[in-house]
Length: 252
Image 1 (tube, one colour):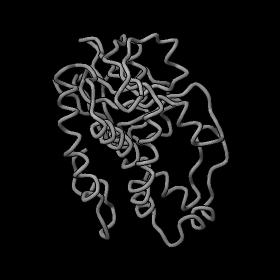
Image 2: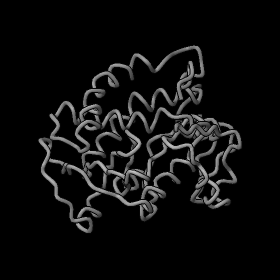
Image 3: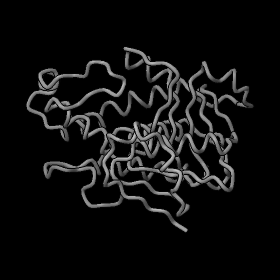
């Protein structure tokens, strides 16, 4: 996940001038969360930077670029079976723009819209058991939802966002309709969204989160453990469309 020009496939521009200052500002916040092993009270600025950082990690990825490239040439099909955008619609919305150009546009505009959605959710840090580490892929942010909606904004509002930040810590942004069943101990953040200190998840939930990471990996899947035998247990029907050259890296 650390290769030159990994996110900048064309020589015309770079996302670094936009992304680097945000990464620098959010780094101390992530370091504090890892040190405390919970989500501490965050200032308004820290909350905005963290939300923007998570949104960027969702949009800057190779899976987004690949999707745009496939829409542009007419080879993309939606996993839910619904009708996908056509090349004509792509060209109408983004005339004379490449997939990389459009991804840059997403990063500099949509990332702020995605960040706003996070402020409608419960923020928490989930902790895994010591013997159940998380994996992370080159598409690190993923969403889970109970129902599918035609309206993309409604889909985002109803989805839970996840971002692993440590082998045993994952940031979770949970929609309001799931908050009451969880019955968490939470406190109000200074921006009036709910902030939970921490929550604990079991091996079954960790396995599900790791499966989500593995399923959406484009080229890389990295873990703290060298044991990736669990990959063989993932439904072959889910993985048959995935690239066979995904690289696995387990650290002892």
